Amino acid sequence: MTAVQVGQPGVETVLHDTICGDVLSVGRTSVGYFLTVLGRDDVNVVGTGYEDAGLLLAHHGVIDVSPGGQMLVTPATEFLPEQLSSEPDAPPLRVSGEASRYRMFGGRPVDLLADAAPLRIERVLAYTDGGTRALVIGRQGLDGDALWEVPIGIAGSQPALPRYVIQVRGSTAATYANDGTAFVLTDDRLWHLRENRLTALELPDAAPSPDGPIAWIVREPVTGL
Image (cartoon, rainbow, N blue to C red; front, side, top):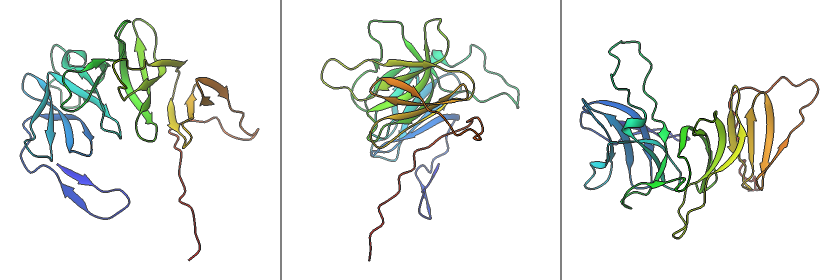
């Protein structure tokens, strides 16, 4: 497995061994890299790139890893079909399902919603600077897909709870700005999320309907030499 550096030339080989199975997802922390590996009859989270690396979390998969190193994981039964397809053009498995927080070497996964129906996360869209919150597409119970804001870090004994933002339709994307607010694109509309409140943003009259990914680009300050 090779890691490609963004913004500077060069690559780094982080795993020289042959992987026995399919890699369904990959995440990185300051400690090392973490893979969801589909073996012959099971799925496990495996670490590499650090001392004594190996099996980290059995019978689970990594949905995503925050910049701060917190993992969102789900049991293998959530995304593994009863019978794996043998067709060569079958779509790849996506690691998604009832999500839990997992802190590396911190014990068992912790439910996101301890006293309510579990939150099934389909995809992570964006993290705040520092990775303490994330915007995800997910659903609860029989409800349709929606945008949720999920706290990643666990503060004290009472973790904060995920918060419903808006029902999603069509192409959906999101990004956080430097000030912790977020911009959300769904149902061909652009929204601004600030202090738990959504405000629709009006586009210029001649502007096309927004579609596709969005990003908040930080420009480094330019100083005189």
